[in-house]
Length: 235
Image (cartoon, rainbow, N blue to C red; front, top):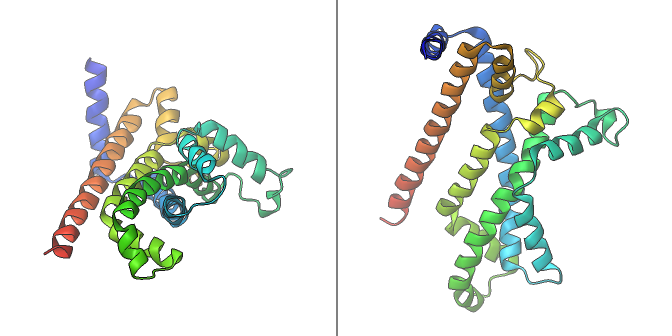
């Protein structure tokens, strides 16, 4: 228990000291995570809306596939991206393996199905409510998708937050394609795993505290923004 308390004390001292290595790891973590979530939103939002509104052969199978991909094992995604980006892979010429870009690609693949599946559910419910009105207005399919996405924007923030939570805590895929290289690809989750294995609990605990704090902060900010924007929209 004393070791646990001492580790916590050292962790908070490390945070308060503004350690340069610690800040570098945090900045890289945020860069990789936020980039992946932004890309996943750019792909997942229109994809989910198209699945909600569209009626075409194989739609049911595609919806089932997207839902199933929400539970993709991270190490499998990491292995797939590794094979694509390795020197013998089809994209090896880009030399992206063991770079932050490779980590962003892996996280984007993990997060996109979550955002697409949640978007499909939200937009499908809204489409059932507005379908007759939109038909009477002669709205085209792309116009319907754009209208429903805009109208559901506050609800869709929940999907983005779910994706952000998945990306912030991810370690399996990014350690395969990023390699946990100091000053290059080392992020909070991979550093926690490494430092714990080395017995350096103070740094691992410090990063854990920051990781949880960032998650709470980002969720609080987005939920506050969502509440304020909704009040202004319906005032």
